[in-house]
Length: 455
Ligand SMILES: Nc1ncnc2c1ncn2[C@@H]1O[C@H](COP(=O)(O)OP(=O)(O)O)[C@@H](O)[C@H]1O
Ligand SMILES: [Mg+2]
Image (tube, rainbow, N blue to C red; front, side, top):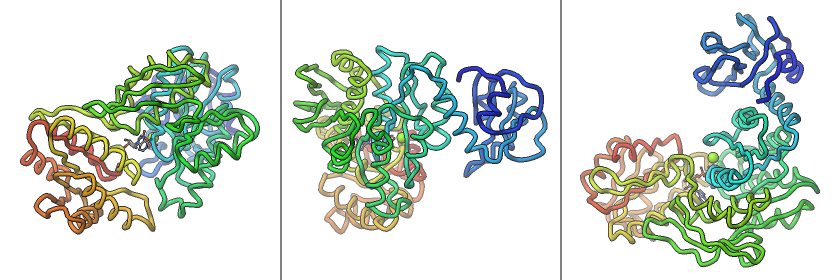
């Protein structure tokens, strides 16, 4: 954040400063991250209320707390709602980022990965700040903007949506110069309510641009392609499609499922080999290269950056466990498209290593009306892909196991457990050196615990 007095912050958030004026140099919502000079913003979340940590924040040197509950001791800025105030403060910060450009990364799958890769690409040439981890909501997005260094040139901001108008609101705050749409899929269908709503919500970032800015869209995705055809903004397309502005040719997967391809744009061609496994990472890498082109990075620089770039943990995080079992921890979240992508990559890895594939799967949350059907389809996919052992974790994932057995998986090659620890014990007893274990499910299913137990 650009340092500023509390009195200025109070006016930016239309709040009242109670106590002496002082300079705040950072903003934190987690009191444990507070260092001297921080403004602590007390956010009321689903699990905890930040107002309970104000005292802790002061003990760690916070200059003030932004609060909406009365009666807090110490220097405070009082507002009607701290969540709204945090957005207003970030919008104000954005106004002060003279000369900085913001690119918003949106879509159903691959946002965090594309964000990480794009930051690596753009960072080769420009002072770049990216959303930490998966900071993409009405708290994470303002914290992304407020976390930037004063002299930042490009902010790569992830934006997530679970409801209509979510991304529109985040765009009003971040005012992106460019927006990326990675793809449009079934993620959070249960909360969105219908496919039509997802398609409408997915269009919001491109619509937000109006006739200005640049829409960077995946033309391999029919829905995203339609957004690009509809907009008056500049468009950069990416994909395998031969008409894409930034495309991949001759994609090949190595034995560890890392993709190698020729990155091609405007008549130039550069070889790329990704550091992250998964064929689906090609699309994310192309999104990153397209962002790079938009930011003025050469194609050769994009290729070099992509070769060395990693992504946030629990996305296709692959390691060999103590007993020689290859573990793929893709347990950050799951929906039908990302399940299919991870299963295909893991299948490839096992085949290349001459090992067998174990899929340890939790349920896919927030699918609403299509949930049962999609879990059944996943069970069928497991059989078609040829998984040697299927293990499900949790009650809701049993549908996957039942569908797999109905589709022809031998019952002795299927097991269902309640606890990740039981699944890990099953894998330990069954798997041998060279076998590949994929651990994946929605965040709440905690499948990363299976992966960690096998380390
Ligand atoms: N382009 C893609 N298509 C399908 N699945 C993907 C894609 N990119 C990533 N995934 C998978 O989706 C999950 C989430 O990836 P992540 O990059 O965190 O996306 P997001 O931030 O949109 O949730 C991971 O399991 C990852 O393997
Ligand atoms: Mg994310």
